[in-house]
Length: 221
Ligand SMILES: *[C@@H]1O[C@H](CO)[C@@H](O)[C@H](O)[C@H]1NC(C)=O
Ligand SMILES: *[C@@H]1O[C@H](CO)[C@@H](O)[C@H](O)[C@H]1NC(C)=O
Ligand SMILES: *[C@@H]1O[C@H](CO)[C@@H](O)[C@H](O)[C@H]1NC(C)=O
Ligand SMILES: *[C@@H]1O[C@H](CO)[C@@H](O)[C@H](O)[C@H]1NC(C)=O
Ligand SMILES: *[C@@H]1O[C@H](CO)[C@@H](O)[C@H](O)[C@H]1NC(C)=O
Ligand SMILES: *[C@@H]1O[C@H](CO)[C@@H](O)[C@H](O)[C@H]1NC(C)=O
Ligand SMILES: [Zn+2]
Image (cartoon, rainbow, N blue to C red; front, side, top):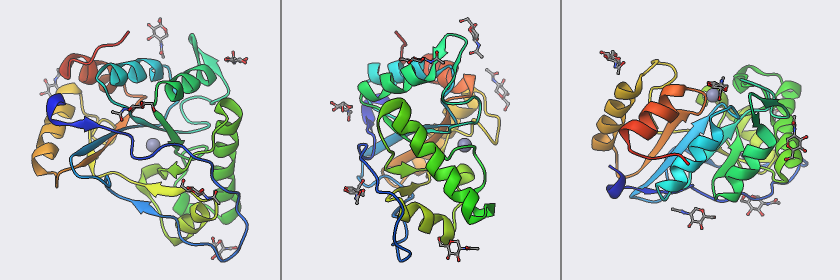
């Protein structure tokens, strides 16, 4: 699988503007990679204790990946836990060429949030990434992939593009183990239209360890 695929992040980080005008454009929406032949490996729901291992594995395989992070999901982004300082691992991932993007502050379904809460979900996360890494994300994957026009407006007002996925390791909703994930990848590679944007979760041990390391043969350092 590795030789056939080029791993890329779909864009680099850039600074987003702050919300201002009422009359803002809807956020740009990406539901697939822009370029044929490309695979975007994405990992949601962190930062968590596996982040550095995943960064290293993907780097060692010659690729870059995207982490869609929360401010307060499995843990608070400002914390340090079990030997993992999230500030340090986020800076490490960026230095290694990986992309950090938003997955909202606390993983709420944004389509159910009132405007104030939606603003907090977006702004608190961007503030956190600015504080810990000096960057403001250009992309957000809304939790559950759920968006509507209000979400697109709120993200557009912050100059953020909205990203979903078109391929799924099934490591979350389907509770896939590593062999299930590999089967899902194989099935979706065959069915794909020539590019894949794949949903994984950095918080699922099967994903980062059994699947990436044992099945794909990507090693950690
Ligand atoms: C909006 O984002 C795009 C792409 O990330 C960037 O090129 C542009 O400079 C940004 N515009 C503003 C006003 O921040
Ligand atoms: C905490 O660290 C220990 C020792 O490195 C490891 O075995 C354990 O899996 C870690 N727990 C979590 C939740 O990462
Ligand atoms: C994490 O590391 C940064 C420096 O890399 C340090 O400033 C910060 O205090 C650490 N945070 C915790 C919670 O230990
Ligand atoms: C990964 O990111 C680094 C640093 O930005 C870059 O030099 C390298 O070309 C990227 N690799 C791929 C496969 O895009
Ligand atoms: C929420 O914001 C949207 C634009 O982002 C606007 O169309 C809508 O009227 C607002 N709703 C409320 C209750 O303010
Ligand atoms: C993975 O789950 C499937 C059922 O979906 C099971 O048949 C298989 O034995 C499991 N594999 C491993 C390595 O646990
Ligand atoms: Zn998520």
